[in-house]
Amino acid sequence: MTAELTAQVCVVGGGPAGLTLAVELAKRSVSVVVLEQSGHFNRSFRGESVSPDSVWLLDRLGLLGRLDGTYAQMHHMEIVDGGSTVLRTDFSDYRYPHPYPVELPQPALLSALAEVGREHAGFTLRQSATVVGLLRDGGESGPVTGVRARTPDGEITVRAALTVAADGRFSKVREMSGLPYEKLPLDRDVVWLRLPFPAEWDYHTYRIRIRGGEHGLFIPTHPDSVRVGLNIPKGGLKDLRAQGLGALHERLDRLAPELSGTVRKEVRSWSDTSMLDIFTTVVPRWSTAGLVLMGDAAHTLTPILGQGVNHAIIDAVTLAPLVEETMAAGGGTQALLRAGERFQESRAEAVRRSRALQLRQERLFALHGRLGGALRRSLYRVVDRNRSLQQRVLARAYFQMQQPGPVVAERVRRESVRPV
Ligand SMILES: Cc1cc2nc3c(=O)[nH]c(=O)nc-3n(C[C@H](O)[C@H](O)[C@H](O)COP(=O)(O)OP(=O)(O)OC[C@H]3O[C@@H](n4cnc5c(N)ncnc54)[C@H](O)[C@@H]3O)c2cc1C
Image 1 (cartoon, rainbow, N blue to C red):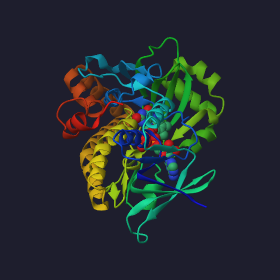
Image 2: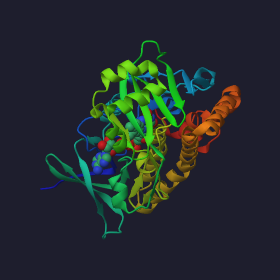
Image 3: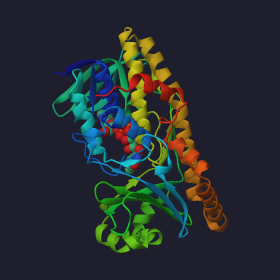
Image 4: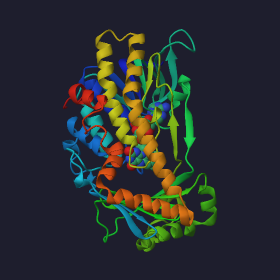
């Protein structure tokens, strides 16, 4: 027999977007069931760089204290191109309450969110529950009224006035909903690997190394390692693997010769690496009757400047008060649809700006040849020398919430962020 749960909101996906939303709803006495396909929160290589705005939000949500000891602040960002330092940012120059990005492993963030959620009545998290179908009223094109999920104990259904797709970059719910979307592949993919943190490096610095058309991201990873992201041509993993692991080692040698010994010791098979297919997804409409998309399901971004988790958390604190307000007024399908539209209106412009910044940065990385390299270095040096330009460029990614101005930031400040 199929077990049936009922809640005001069913969230599909217990990542940063889904869990933050569920906690914010439960705090507002909106009942919520989260269905998460994985049985645990252990995930590596993803979503560890958290923007200053999200750090500020996590603080206001009362979570930062609980996360003490699980994250590290980053104080500088340094770009070295063709062997010379062309740009260095000191985040302490930024006059915001939280100027520093942090490196926070997702398992710590997700466990803390689940812990806070369980302290509130009306919060249910079902792990090992994979959503496989949507429930609809009155046939295929009727409003979504919940989901069907597979669990180790058999199938369950969750009936809800609103279903939220927070199931990530390959969202099944988005697919099943029929909402159209466009996946835009970037020209290059990234191979990730993890190495012990080199003793001679400062732990609080993000490093970007570029040589010709190759670049590497070197991201300190709590507590004592460094994540290395190396670009490869789109779909180029097969070719790289055919050349053997030595080709990967040599790629790293060209960017960070000081890691040559370590990479040969630590990366002995392809299973010590992980591949990220880089694309961005544009979804023109984030909601339909009974359903709203959020986080990566609504707007997949690239890893540049750690924007995915940031937008996931801002989505959650923007959507929660809109849902609360609508549920309090009766929670009708049309009113919830309007809430979904207002949510997209509040968020779309900020997402668009982040995407545009990432795409510009990706194009800069990809410049090569003598002229291309020289142009890139000149641009970075201009930004390096002009502090106010540098602050304006980074503010588009890091300080959209903390600076006064945007309506959504004001609204979130005034209404939605309640301490736990
Ligand atoms: C390799 C890699 C590195 C990254 N590095 C960074 C970074 O440093 N900083 C940053 O900000 N962003 C980074 N990102 C992006 C970041 O991980 C995402 O933007 C962020 O996690 C989005 O949160 P989300 O909750 O929307 O989606 P996700 O974190 O993807 O969560 C979706 C959840 O839905 C679950 N799910 C999927 N399908 C179903 C289903 N059918 N039923 C039930 N559950 C389901 C998944 O198991 C998952 O837990 C990285 C991504 C990758 C892949």
